[in-house]
Image (cartoon, rainbow over all chains, first blue to last red; front, side):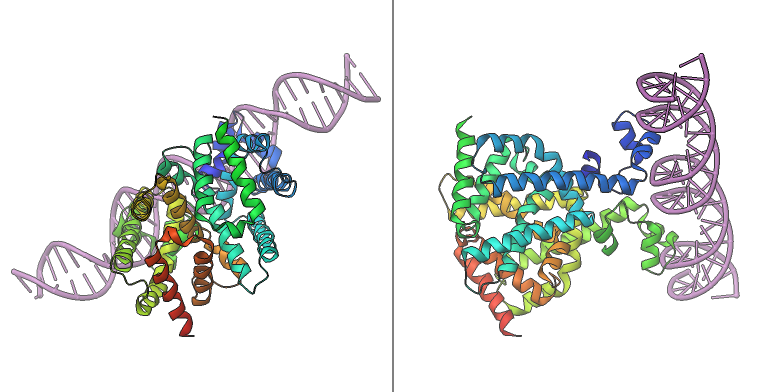
Length: 189
Length: 189
DNA sequence: TTGCGGGCAATACGTTTGTATAGACTCCTG
DNA sequence: CAGGAGTCTATACAAACGTATTGCCCGCAA
């Protein structure tokens, strides 16, 4: 997953994966069959995990719980990097996840604003912007001077996002929840 | 450029480029030397062009001129797609352009808001969000149901961005300029 | 003890890749 | 008209790649 995320799928070799895992190239093949099947296995693992975290966080109203945030910050980064690469490298599974996120966001927007605004476009752009930060995490980290996925970097980037985006579109509750969650994390340091 | 943008650098072959250009692989090598030098040539071409357009558009206050917008919409898309890929594929030149955009944005933000807000983080996130839409243009187009770089798609995405981002951060003048520019284009159809 | 299935490595094979080399053709110049 | 520089193709080659094949080793059930 790490190699796929950092180098892209085409640039990552079975031999490189085997070396990183300290096994023989044959073993990788023995367990996953082909390179394509290995990629699908990674897709499935990453996307099912992220789906679960999203469900727990958003649907379960845990966005302001420090232990949830801590847990996410510890486990999600490699998976987010993988998702970012998968979106650019043309993974069908990642594309499906993008579409899901857009749909969820669209419903959320339509719920909070019953006007005839272009909720589809807003949801799409909002999703792309949010994921764009993930896809460009390397550049964001460099410009920030801190790893985006280190506590400091995530905090600064998170607050900046809340500053930049009109609160209405996150929904007041979600917005306040995210804000107080960030502040709690900040208070711990 | 198109092949690099669509497939990434590693997945694009000299032979594929030659075929698309209807020449022999040897000729590509004759003109550009190695694949790496060809990539650098693409980088240089794309970035110098985009730099020029940014200068003309922002510094020259042409953002609301329909002929400027039309011209950009006709020429920029392939270059934007290339830039998006280059950012993900680790091009040093693209990384430098990202940093420039962050710096320009940061100065812009600091000029309009003299408080002690984290302008660096805001500029970084704003830049990443804007470029993120470019990087994820394929998914944005699919979710929109229209090519992001077709007139309709660009219009919807542009308006959605203006809706989503707090106007203060674009600067009132820039914001109004962009909005009236979009409306003029809309009125033409 | 025997047999056997799964985890694992070593080797081999055909393909693709970047690149080097050599030659053909065109066009301009002296 | 001779010739040389530049454009372009064809061929060749070594390296890297994905993958197939083979066999070793260990644990476990009969």
